[in-house]
Amino acid sequence: MKAFRGTLIAAVALLLLVGAVLLLRPDLLSDGPEGPPRLFQFEKHELVRIEVARPDGDVIALAEKDGQWTIEGTDFTAGRSMVNRVKHQIHDLTARATVVEDPEQPELYGLGKNATQVKLQMRDGKEMAFLAGDPNPSSVSYYIQPLPGSVVYTVKKAAVDYYSLTLDEFRERRFASFDSKDATRIQATLRQEGGDLVLDIERVGDNEWQMHAPTQMGANDDRVRRLLGRVSALKASDFMTLTDADRAQRLVDYGLNPPRADITVRFASREPLHVLVGQDSPADNRFEELAYMMLEGDDTVYVARRGLLEEFSQDPAELRNRRVVSLATADVVSVDASLKADGTDDLKGEHGVRFAAEQWLWKDGVPVPGSTPERVARTLAELEVDAFVEDAPTDLSAYGLADPLARAVLADKDGNERVVLIGSTGAPEVDPEGREHARRYAAIEGDPAVYLVSDRSLNVIKDLIREGNRKAEADADKAARRERIPSASGEGDALPPEGQP
Image (cartoon, rainbow, N blue to C red; front, side):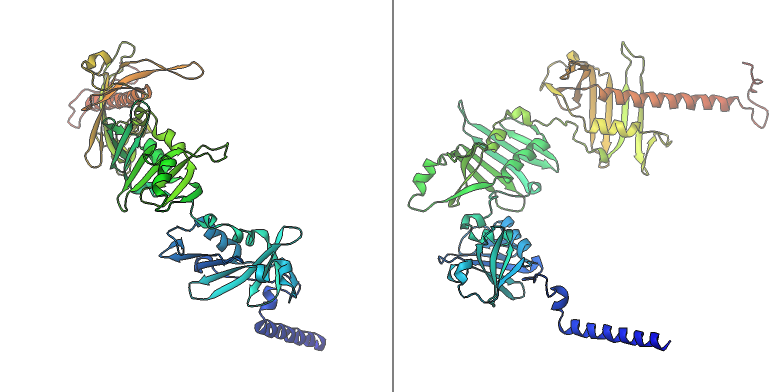
């Protein structure tokens, strides 16, 4: 028992000794005596300034102000990828090995007068600095010397190899980026053989656009967003700076005066973005077709991919809005449908459903089983036309729309109504395998245009009418049975014995 007590006391004393040592020398825990030391450690968001001083005297400084990184001494925006690269590589940099503690000839490591000096400033004013040298003989690591200090370490190549890049490599390459949700209008002029193409598309709702030129028509939200995306994604592969002395001539040489394309994007909360596209760039790039571009009023000409020209040059009819009902499915609160019998189907009737208390109800308040009301609302609210047949027909009877086969009234929670008319059979759609899919002529009441739509629009209306008819028959049968039950006074017809008519 005494031996056990002595062992316990010795163990406690040892733990207290270890604790005291770690309290006085916490570095022993983080960087063991044989482990590589951690050179820098900080939170990424604390970095606010980066200064790179080259041995030739050039200095590049990137600084954050109001959340925006810029290159000091210029009007250039600093590249987000480059800033993030510095943060990611340096914020917890650990050495791979200790090379020498006090080199007599630091130039052998690309240090001394041959080094690139990097200074990092934190939000609280604290600074960190180091010298970046040459790659080691294996070229997988670079020499580095933290300052103040004289010890030379090796670190991974990716941590410091980019400090030798040119000023342009520190610039933001996305020169026309914006939030497409803030865009309110696109206006573009594209010079083409046979006459200029002018586009003017204005936002008229959250997901609704109206084309004013070259013709008046609704524009498809997805297609318009593709146009915006093409502009916002422009990324420079090269930069050329204009001077007052050569500006006029170089704009002509680059095909920017006059430009091949002139694109303006207007916004709700910022100044318009005005992009000019010039002639093709002769840059050697067999995988990308490039062109000269600039922002109006800027002194920089960019070389960027010219794919946006194809997008803006497409037939304006391709931009036409194919969703013609313009109601959000989630907002539909009632559907009233009527169907006439035709030569192939005797099904007919008129029924309506309402959405209340998180469920679909028939007009008498009885819940509708199944998913039919939801399918009807979704199919008709999101009705996307397959083809535009005629914009202003003089005779709707030719399409079976003067007296339509089916009529559906959709209303949303704000009281807006859209009436979908389904007419006679139109030309079928033929898929790549040669299969035919039935289509119907359709129109939106109050809109003179005629469309071709999938036969699904008629089928979901038929499903609603069919279920409504079944309910009506069941309700009539229940009512008849109630009338045949004798009343308490003995009045009324008695039910016949079971098995007898």
